[in-house]
Length: 163
Length: 422
Ligand SMILES: Cc1cc2nc3c(=O)[nH]c(=O)nc-3n(C[C@H](O)[C@H](O)[C@H](O)COP(=O)(O)O)c2cc1C
Ligand code: SF4
Ligand code: FES
Image 1 (cartoon, helix red, strand yellow):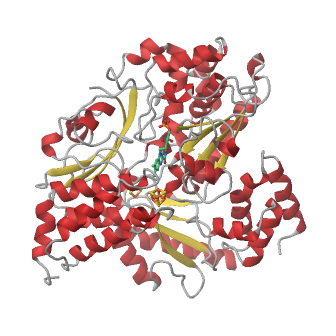
Image 2 (cartoon, helix red, strand yellow; image 1 turned 90 degrees about the vertical axis):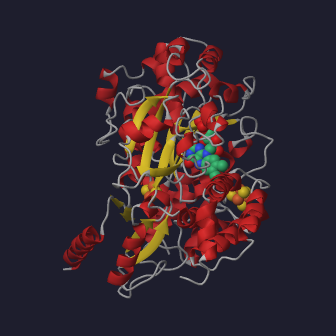
């Protein structure tokens, strides 16, 4: 369950729109963040209540958009652009490298719950292909070697965060 | 043709870097277009935009002034203005530069449009992957509010305009303007049937205008310098400048601001530096973001303006070109292209939802050397169904698909003949 403060905040937030439902997607992003990156059933119910619409409507939205997840995901989400310019510039090599290093396929999460690997549509960095994002960070002209460096840096950060 | 600096006067396209802040924007003639607009009647502002011959930069090239003229000006209820910054068209990366590089230019452009159509509420619809850019826009919106360019009674004009950003949750179809309006309303992003057009019944059933980021970016300059000045750039039917880009197999992939009407050849060989790989000549170009038909070398003298590219059998689209060289296999490229459309179809109508995966299966089988005799004819027929769909998404897939079949037939046939060899 979300804390009452967040619920009040979101309920107030959607009221500034001409219709509360306009705020639905933002509310769902916020709930997803609260629940560790995905939307459990109770989040669907909470979103429905905050916006004042039936739950199946929220479910319909949750299952439509690429960035809403109805099952648990890793602490970090890696998306690899596989659109045309990145395809020409070697994104398949990156995907293979990720699969080998992380031991997972596309759409899967590592056993330690650290990473989820997903394809993504053109990230608008086509002149610096291939392009990937890990959470909010964009990395361009990525090579398998650069990938190793990025992953090492991230796991060092995670280790620091936990100690 | 030389590069120009109109929309990019505050942006270095070679290295976008930090956004132009309010102070720098003002020092470089900022909000002069808005001031010029406020000195006129809304209808006069509309007329200037019409006279400028500005055409939409989101891909379809519809004349902006004409589009606006369908908004009922005697309507007394709420009207809305929406900016389309979904930019998920593969190969397209121009709106990102405008959003991240000069958010005040977008805000000023929207303010001018809002005033011209007396729309007091606006939203900037931004794809989730550009959320850092949205935060930059939020900061610029705050600067604009503090300095009296947004909010109530703007610059003492009596006109109110409330503008905010809206982050999407990712789906290519959100870029289609009626799907975008559904998305903004918190619905699944399926397109709506037209009519009614958004200008009459759009966001929440009210009159609404949706324009592209770059379209709005032109307005401050048109208002500050006039329609005649603007029309001197570009061609007779495609006025002004265009942010053009190149990616794929070129030496110097990036963006440039160029007058409309520069030749495709100049763009490929002079600006983008020609082939990236030695010994591999360029053999095809998709001229305007993925959803436009391929052009081949004997068509490279085509001028990059709306009408010339259409005459060559393709579309200017977003004017961000995707370049293929002789080392690229067009069957494999087509597999990648159809995979994109298969994944992003919104699923609402059958020829698109069923037809595109069906076509992808065939192309994929051919790449696996499992093609059969007769596949070419079958694929061409299936490709023709793609124009019988609810929205322009599937016709967008049809363009690169059918042109690849036609122009690179030999490559497909070679794979089909190599059946069982993979
Ligand atoms: C599948 C599809 C995707 C589209 N994506 C975008 C987009 O990302 N950005 C955009 O401005 N227009 C996009 N469009 C075009 C819009 O529907 C609309 O024409 C445009 O936003 C209008 O703005 P303009 O008149 O300023 O060009 C797309 C159209 C289709 C059919
Ligand atoms: S053509 Fe495709 S994207 Fe458009 S409505 Fe039909 S299924 Fe949806
Ligand atoms: S194609 Fe990958 S960023 Fe555009």
